[in-house]
Length: 389
Image (tube, rainbow, N blue to C red; front, side):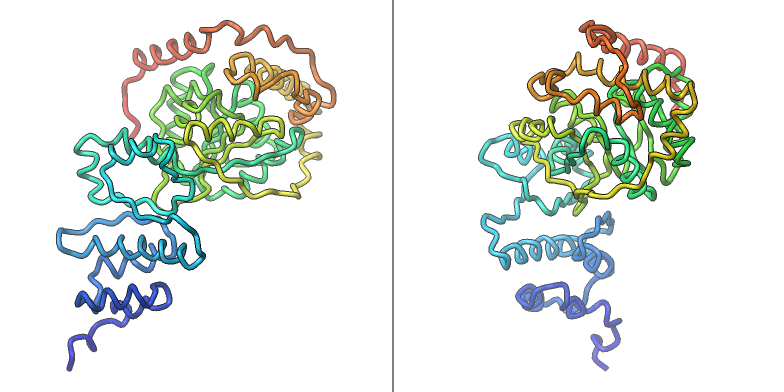
């Protein structure tokens, strides 16, 4: 009996005929390959469907073909759609990052990222280059009418309820407000962390977040920088960052890999959309996230929450914190208090009337955020050196 007849049909290359073009299969056959190795049989069907894959196998087991065939098929599909300028780029991390910083190198439509011999890449000191490369791959942005921002977040949390999510806010009180509303009135699995919490409380939160399989963590930038937070599935920038560097730092916490799509999204008010063009100038490209026309009716839950005087006071403080955060925004032409619909912002915090707020106080002192961050890091270093296990 022929050896090929004894082989599991699923291990034959022709089993992939519905996923792989005839030209590619013919090329594989011409090279003398009829039967897939174990690593190829495991990886190819998944990778060809666009799944993220992490695979290990010994030298000579056929790993190269396992990632080259999906890469070639991606190019073929683009050519069939008459998409011009499609290429496979083979490079070291350092050289690739150099090209990504040049004006002529267009990677806005990148479909696939392959890391061959990833262990050696990290061993040779390319970790920082890889972070910069991955952080610059296209993410998403969404535009929502200001007063429905809370509704938008509610829908996104439902959509991502089976994942580990980080949601960034611009102030401590905003973190507390949204955590209180979603945990108490929407019964959502959410945690919160911000710079005014004690080091012990922050460590407990991160431990819980680290051990959970699906949960959302509401946080500020300062708190997130001060602790060892594991990679997550989704990054939601509910309040936009101050600049491109802060944007890159936030999305760097996502576990993004080959074929990953849509796991980093930034929410913008209609008057903040120019931020997308600003990021483009820094070679950071954002695609439009799906638009939602319908939201669940949160008003009954919001009315119940606002009937509590303490929660109402928290909403006022959260609104004021949100407004004061604009004092340290560098891009005044984009994050413009003059063009902002302040009444709509107040409604997004459940407030029927906008409270008084003096935007010249709070974070108006230039170095206050730095001092708070320095104090947090000093406290962390002195009081808690243990690692999360």
